[in-house]
Amino acid sequence: MLQQIKTILLKWYSQNQRELPWRTTKDPYFIWLSEIILQQTRVQQGLSYYQLFTEKFPTIFDLANADEQTVLNTWQGLGYYSRARNLHATSRIIVHQYKGVFPSSFEEIKSLKGIGNYTAAAISSFAFDLPYAVVDGNVYRVLSRVFDEDSPIDSSAGQKLFQNLANNLLNTSFPANHNQAIMEFGALQCVPVNPNCDICVLNQHCLGRQNNRINVLPVKEKKTKVSKVQIDYSIHFDENKILLRKRLGKGIWQHLYEFPHCIDMPKDPPVFSETHLLSHQKLTLNYYRNVNNTIAFEENGLEWVNIKDLESYPKPKPIQSFIDNYLDELNSEN
Image (cartoon, rainbow, N blue to C red; front, top):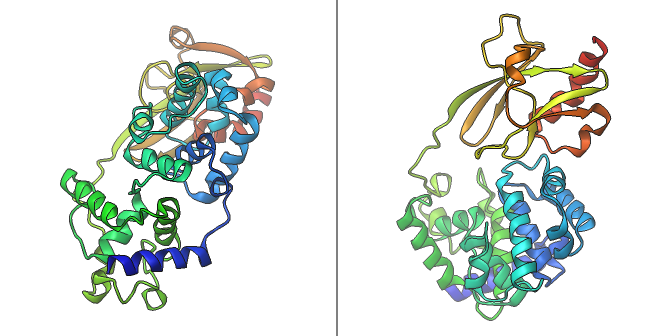
């Protein structure tokens, strides 16, 4: 059965694979770049960022030599900014410790900052044709359905079990194509909701379909706890300048720019409010004008920025959206 599935997946992939630029290279730098960008990012969105990064940083030396603000600004809009900071830090490690040559062993790759089992397996197989099986969200879904396996994919035991399943299924003669095939199969055919099992090339081998359990697989045991957070911003202008605040502490949006925080609860209504959903937080963002002027100026990380230079400062997506839609109107009222 395993051999049949391997053969079917490779044939399906040869007929259905999408043309993506990182699939036409063996350069580990470009493959690594694509894998970091595509974590928690849809391919359609990731493609434009991949093209942007490869144009701005065509070699790992270009990325390593860039300052963090430039890298974060290029990343702006992708979210999970720790990925960008790790990407930048790892590029410098490779340049300084490996003379710019990407390490070629699984263990060395995995030891790099921001690289776990999945990314190390992807780079090892795609760039160096090493026999390491990838397990991402698409692979979890395919394996859990084909083998009717309901071990929770967010448990240590479940992750170990699915990694073993993936290892057993891996076509060691063609590890790169096999890994691409099973991920692509999950992305295009074995989709999360209402997959078309009638036309699926694996439907005769799929135990989940035979047992009518497709829509309950894969299984997760933990529910993401979402906390509610409110941030009150105060907008300050000084002729053609605006006051920004760089987030210096750890946490979301580290080293990105926002507006000064209101220290006390403002009495006036905000000029604008919005709700922004993150993976673990529901943010309510309120924007005020010139609130707590003296107190706000005591914050660390404050910087007067020329409004025409705002684009060069990396900002969280909701801050950028506020600037795009409301800043001109507010500034005209000064």
